[in-house]
Length: 495
Image (cartoon, rainbow, N blue to C red; front, side):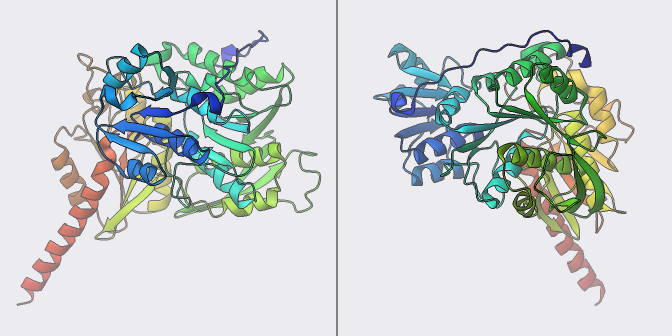
């Protein structure tokens, strides 16, 4: 996509959200979802009257009820009686009874991105976008700012470990938000600092072409005000090309990464187990008041991709004028985000982790991190492709990424919002695997296969954006059951 870096003018029309007072009583259809629950939590913190519905109960819904939200299990037209604003996500169909009733009654209907835009309209907004790494980077920035005495509001697509929630209303005027590009809804925000972690072809079911993806990110960057800042990864070709083009408009750009010439350059130091370290070099004049050189970035999470995510966080600290020493001290306490190389437990000396990776680049990063943690031991992967369109587009790339494992079991495709596509199955991936016996249509058999093949010190990693995460506890239980069974056999043999 680097051919998009012409000097052609970039323009975007900013969405003007309603004020909080105009929202009135707000109802969320599908309030239990990660993005929806985050906005609901923030609006409750802002003093709004909030209700919502979902098909089934969840911990998130229970927490919102404790904060004062009215929660409906099941969806019906009566649930929107008397509300002033209804919030939906792209996943809500027009036939939904609550949405039908709201439209018939002339109730204001907002996409969740528009609702979030309203919630942060009066703040200095740090919007984190990119094909990969958004949730972790947004989480890092939030933890960093709070540790550096900036009580930022935040909305993240997953629970921030250490904070225990995916959103919160802070006392400062800074708002950190994960900006979802999947349906171009991130164009509803008005960022003061826009972070682009990387820019690759994805979500082609919405955009159609890689060029359209790049064009959307150009519009996102064009939403920055005259005194705004684009934070971009120097290591990623798409992000770097975007920064080069945006720089021609006079907008301030801060780059970070391992690449020579980055404004904030990371020099890898050590990768040991779950920890990673890098030395930071700042472009001359970028931190005129910092005497200590070099500065060191320390993380409690593995992988160069996480060091890069932290580089973005440091760049945000620079853009906001936050003390970099305090920022680095806070990042040293960052322990991860939910479903991002998240530890699920262990048994028989085998550790089980779960990761949300669902694009080949993300899968590669997750497996490289697992390799770092496993050391001389083996990495076993249970992978679930996400979306028929993505599987068709990237089958070969997924196979290349999965071949970094020692053993792999590939489940059937998680359809999510898509209908099945004839001829598109997980076998498109497994046919190209170097590793044998990859296709695993029987999930129970796949779990047992991984358990049987794992030895003490190995890692089992569940990977994907669907319900593959639910297999983590099953793997831990199977490992521990296997351990108990073997102990019983050993005890019996002594007699």
